[in-house]
Image 1 (tube, rainbow, N blue to C red):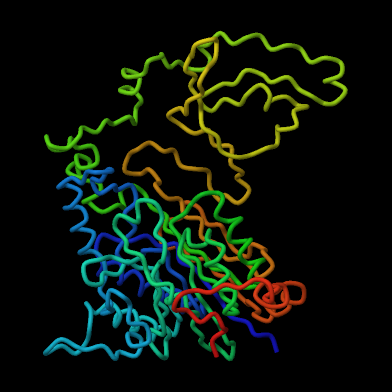
Image 2 (image 1 turned 180 degrees about the horizontal axis):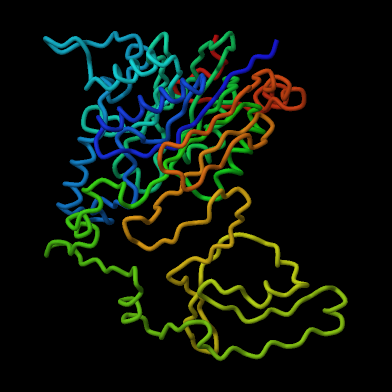
Length: 461
């Protein structure tokens, strides 16, 4: 008898308040229940919010008062699940931690709201959130069972780039997979958050636990995300769910969009702090450069020699002059060019004349997008910098255990769009192990070994 379930991801964006976001979450869960969804994933940092475009007034050696005020606002928007800074693990799940005098629960009540939403709808919820514990924030994922409540939680062990300024590192012990049974289908699920999925050893720690449902909430809307999810599905022989937010600039919280925050982002440091230059426009950089920077089409380039008969016989094509500002090069536009079909993303270029007729290529102010649009459902919205500008396009998807795209990617849908995959047969995961089990028959575990501090890599019972 096929072991099938209905899985879904919600491309929902964070609302102005935690209360409003929790209300929207419950509403989305009810809609999923009407669609007979068994398990539903929400994006990274859905509760608490992903502070996209905010630099919190920080530079190397300098933090501004405005940035500290932004962090205060962000800290207050995070949720308190009643856990400890180090993470209490099983004791948190089982509610064995001490209560404050006169209190009947730990935290701010968010855990109880999530459990109520799961219980009332019968939908297993996996929710990305920003959690505060002690004086630090953690990016986390919580697993909420309709019958048992919260059965696990994990914290991101490696925040990416500027995230490391505002998010602390979680313990690797929280990478432990959890198990549940839905409609007689046993699930072993675990989550890797955003760019943790680019960490091969972290991925392998989840593969080793024999997951058949791999969860990947993210904030990455790049074209490279879908191939990564397909690779993970192929490697793990598991179903992969990935949810991202679709966000317009108007959806960002006021403390990011307000003039005060803009001042914080470009504020002048105090008199005892070295002055910072804003080189975003390149204007100040031009004033301080020893050599003049000019656009490529303003330079008298040496004439390109014609290819010799030997070159032509071997298919060698002489390079053509480049152009900037999104215009394809002559080489790319040739009908016989071997790179005509190549797609990707490259920077526009400026050239700096140097001594001895050499030129230094510098990145321009914009990027030329040559990315494939095969999976786009809508054209990209113009980046006008206004309130309607898309600062994150989404890209949520559902992938099968041999790498096939079942649903998505979903672009430019910002109103809680649901991607639903029905009749998901989890025995396909076992069928896929015929020729590949990277943590078993294909692992050569007699020669290679992975150990993770505080984490048992054996499959859970």
